Image (cartoon, rainbow, N blue to C red):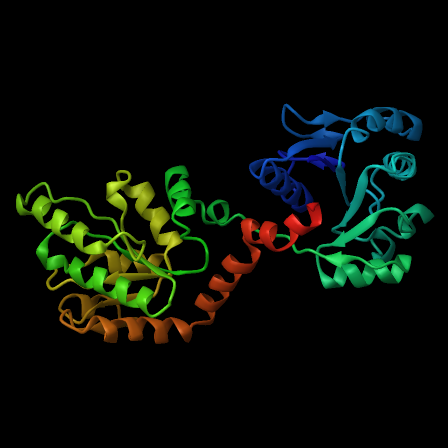
Length: 362
């Protein structure tokens, strides 16, 4: 479809509406639609710049030939916020003059009920009878109804988790390909492939969680130990035990995990999983604490002494089923984990697209 997005300004100008419109443009383009952004200021090299002059005729002359080629036009805040009255008037005309085109008013704010903007011109207190309306929250839908007497459907804004988490590009791409941002449990095991690191338990716990029906992935950084000739052989054995599913992923097989990537993995993960049989110190526990991650680790010295509270310990020889239950029950009690999982499932932009935008475009 040909999709147009209209707002007063567009990215790289910073603002909430600008960010949402940028994400809409990215989503629609990624799903095969042809997107045109129209604005007065900002916008990328392909954006259509509207004239600044405060003349409805000038705005209409610039708008009409572009809007006439669209299948659907999303009007972000331009019908409810008084930042360029001439543009609003020109758009009202366009809705009447282009009946083949679907127009959707996207309401982020309602100036007519905001004392910071009162009084506003009557046009900002009306709903165009031939324009559908979407509000970003139930509150904005109620305010729109109170001001105009018309109803608005609700489609929430979303977030782009890799951007919010500041993931490096390679980690972000990897996470999207492996669906690591779909609300599953992600356990991080940063380790070299040596016997004492007990990667076998990571594999067994990951498989146990998946077999129970709990979406989960254990992310093992999995660098071969350059000082240990047996490390490569062990790695081949461990990889053979992972199976052809994502219960366990050896990230080091896909790209080099340096400091930047490791920091990204800490932000991506829900918890640190560190089942070593022996350690000289245990730096990952301190790194996890700085990233505010829950810690599941072996009940061995010195790990049990590094964190004074919060670490959940288990025997490195524990049954995988017992450890999996410990992880599930501990995380289930965490409101932070529950909300993080819900946000990823309900407010990631791909989830918003599947749940709301596909039907709207159809």
